[in-house]
Image (cartoon, rainbow, N blue to C red; front, side, top):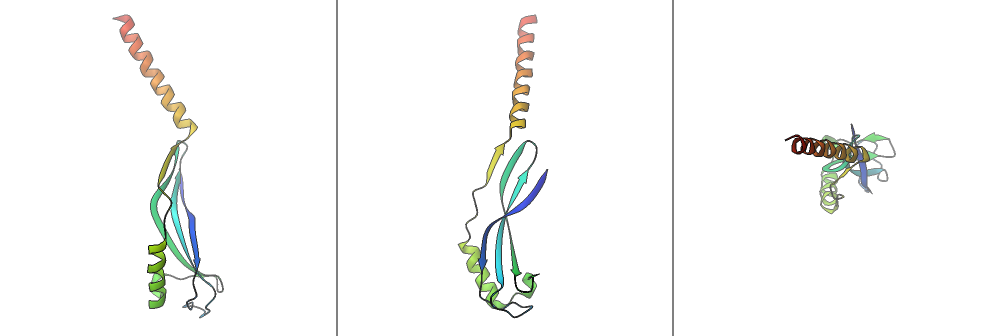
Amino acid sequence: MYDRFITIKEVAINNNCPECYNTNGLHFTFKQKFVETSFYKSLTTEIAHELNCKTCETTIYPVNWTDDIDRVFEYQQRAFVPKKASFKLKKTAWIAIAILIGIIAVGIAATVFFN
C-alpha cells in the first residue's frame, strides 16, 4: 500500500518571498491524497498545501508567512475546488470477491445436497 499527494492546483502569487524578497517566485500548491493498494485505489478528501519560492528554491512554512500571504492563502483556499472523492476496486479485488462467492455457493449446494 502506498499513499501520495497529487497536485490538483498550483497558483503563482505576487507577494514578497520572506526569504529572498523576490516578488515573482512564490507558488501555492494544493494537493489531494491518493491511496493505492493491490485491491483498490482511492482519492480521499484529505487536502494539503505548500508555499514554495521558485527563485530561492525554498519551502515557506506558515510560521514565516506575512499577513499579505495569509490573506492570499485564505482567498485561494476558498477558491480551491478539490476533486470528488472516489473509490475503485481493482481486478484482483473482483477476482477475490468472485472466488468468495463461489466458495459460499459450493458450501450452500453441498449442505442442501447432503441433507
